[in-house]
Image (cartoon, rainbow, N blue to C red):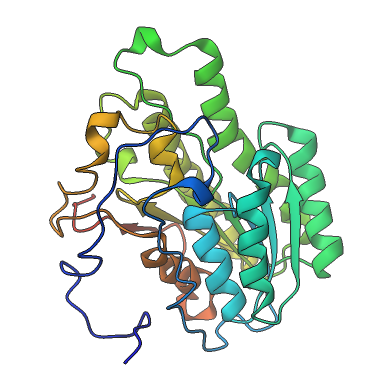
Amino acid sequence: MSRDQYTFTNPAELYADFDPEKQKQPEPGLEAKLHPKPDLGEDTYRGSGRLQGRKALITGADSGIGAATAIAFAREGADVAMSYLPEEEEDAQHVAGIVKEAGVTVLTVPGDLRDAAYCRDLVQQAVDGLGGLDIVVNNGGKQVFQESLTDITDEQFDDTFKTNVYGMFWVTKAALPHLQPGSTIINTTSIQAYQPSEILVDYASTKATINAFTKALAQQLAPKGIRVNAVAPGPIWTVLQVTEGQPQEKIESFGQQTPIGRAGQPAELAPAYVFLASAESSYVAGETLAVTGGSPTP
């Protein structure tokens, strides 16, 4: 029997053959060159019409969590606009092809989230191309480890905050005039917001900021019928890890410190985004849904 996201399984034994290898790519990296390949749910995610007719914008949609979310949204019936860096075109086109197979509209809008003008244009292109907008997923992110605070350059600190925080702010602000009651905003934070690593000071700081932004904006928009929530992934196998996201000596044991004992796969995150995007979560606002392999969060 083929497995899907509803198959009864032992989570500790899922992906038993997953064996990450030491490898290094320059930023932003390509999933096409990553070994082993992450599971995006392309062979396992089964939709059931939970987002039929919805119109979603997803940043960082070329690979990893964003790609898995794009595939799941499409199979649930949503049209999708994908944002990603121009250097990630190969990955983006691969994912866009999978999304199109679901019979929905897909837009590919490359650009840099550090650019406010691009963020505003991205939203407008999504609205024009999809005929509206009612789901925004702020997922694009930058992570580069540094052993010492003194090794974090002003440029890296600025780039990390602009990508992870400013991009979210610019996209969300531009999207708000287009969002009707019933719309949802979902931001990607991290276990790092709660258990910050000593080598990810700038990245962890952005993720804590995203948590606070989510909870504050949720209170502002809930009376208008717009829900704002976040997902906090634990260690997830994506190209981010091999583009200086983690030291090389940690790659082979990546994720083994979790209670489940392994790294998560992007396919295991997508259902959380589907839940928060769908009407099933109508009474959920200002929540951070942790998908951490059992690592506790407050």
